[in-house]
Structures are given as C-alpha cells and as structure tokens.
Length: 215
Image 1 (tube, rainbow, N blue to C red):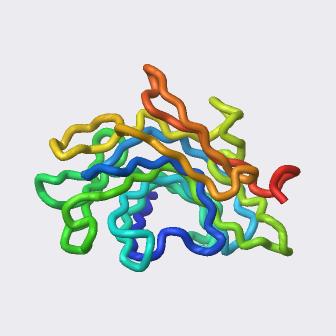
Image 2 (image 1 turned 45 degrees about the vertical axis):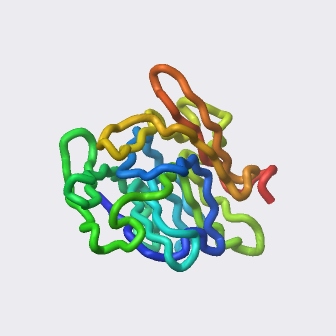
C-alpha cells in the first residue's frame, strides 16, 4: 500500500523527534534516495514511527509548505503495525510535484497551485526518521525509529538512506552540494553521515527510544 503525506503546518510538533540529514541553500526541484525498510516497534497506539523524504518551502512557522513521502508504522492511522513504503520525484517542466515508486511506477502528482512556497521550487530537502514520544508513564517512549538500532551499528543493523540526490534547476539528478544532520535527542535516536563510491552520500539513523542511555 502506498501512503502519501501533504500538509501545510508547523514542521516540528511537540513530542515529535527526528534523526535527519538535510540540504539547504539552493532551489530544489525534487529529491531521490534508496532506503531500506523495517518494521519498528511502536509502543503506544497514538504514536508512530516513519522514515521519509521532506520537500519544504517557507519558514518553520505557520507558513511552511511540506510534501512528505516514505514509509511508516502508525497503529492509530491504519489500525495495525504494518509498514507502508513510498518515494517520489518532481518534474519542473510541468510545474507539478510527481511521485514515483521504484523505477517504473509513476503514481501521480500534486498540482503546483496547491502550494504557495512550493509552487516553483523547494528551499530545503530532508531525509530521515521521525518518531512520536508521548512520554507514557512520564518516561521516554520505547517506540523505535528506523530499525531500532543506533546509526553507529552500521550495515545490516541500522536503517539507512543511500545514494542521496536532489533535482537541480536543469532537471538533473545530482548529489547535494552540502549535507547537514540534526537530531533533538541523540541518546534516543541519532544520525551519522558518510560518503563512498558505491553509496554516494548516505547516512545511518535511528534508535531504540527508551534504553539505558535514553531516560
């Protein structure tokens, strides 16, 4: 099942925690990455865990435009603990934001007139994980992000985004000029960037939530 997210609201809500990589400082017309898929444990019915791409325009206030595509586990939304997977691209020649799954499946688009700050281009791209911490019983949730393993545990254990690319003004896919990273609470969920020939720009991310290092 393919799930789409599109909203215009504050990006960071109370209780939402992230472990992300991001690109900013240019005009962006799309993004791409290869991700691995897990089924993270979600502790509370009203919590969720996701891994996705964010296409962002505007400021991180009430005027933020956001298109979000990826995979998530959300018992409250879907009534189960299954994982949904999705990804996307964009085509500036038509002025719309397109979504593509895998290599061959174009699933649809968001018309540019739906947006104010994303009508022409995006100002930031983010890749990574997000989990809701509702602090059940007054402690950090044990809801996992990614695979439930920290970034430093690496291949076969930690969740990753690899071959990270953006679409530039010439409609070409290329590696971002610079990549930053961010997490609110690295002892619960963290992120670790890297670069090599096969994976290009990549990062590992995630974590178990509540643990001996995450109170």
